[in-house]
Image (tube, rainbow, N blue to C red):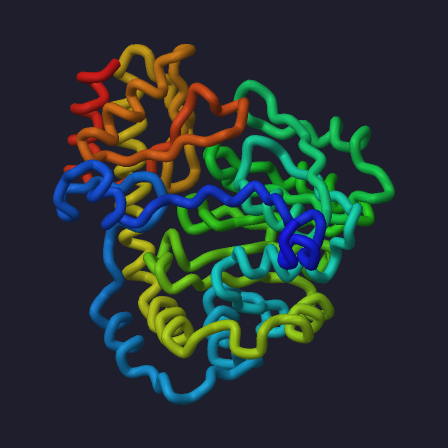
Length: 360
């Protein structure tokens, strides 16, 4: 055993790495296809680049000066956008950072989180990094959650319940009554609303009533700022203060701050683009429904999960990749015959459907 392996925390010597998607340049290299011919539908990214106003705001930022550790201008802008007081808001380097910070605050070695599979793998990944473990509650055949069943698997070591709504990658939402039922337990309940703008359904208004509720949001999907890594959380002011105490002081770059404020200043224009994505999602869903051998699931996000007959998915997945079209497969046993398609531009949808028809 090397010196490094002797010194490193035992539970981190071998970690199941989070499987992220490759950048377009690497996808092009792997497929042997020019970069501009790649159709990247595997990251739930916004197909439209940020506006010139957002780019100019980033270019005008004072890069030689550290950002405000208390994020005053950012929290004020988010307050106006969300309707919540700045005291209830904290921004982060992607919502992933907030997930990690919540684990630092609440999870000690041996503690547990409750998760509903299949869902966003980052929750379980961060739990294991913190030394915790994951208790999985299953979803039904339509991927809906059974809140009643969770009462039998929560124990004294359970600290946090994670619920993604709309859920990634299945696309369905948890209803408000289910979330309020979970909030009755003396546990932290984290509702990940990364796709809020695509469904306009939130439980953030419940936070003044329930101090154990946290809502996570991101600027990656609806605002097209995935590459800048900007997220935020809405939670009790008490919890915001604890997050401020332990976060890296300058966790948001000045470029990220400038982009966030500029994006919120043109939120109306961005929401018009979101409406186009929703329309394209519905068009893609109907086109997929017309293909024999594919079962698309209704979605409230900017993606669609597709199920295939046993043994068919790998052929279609690889066939798409060979044509430079990249979708997302998962390791979850529940999703062994599925892949997820992010909503792209209309011409990308047309190309996707054409190739799928050739493959099934």
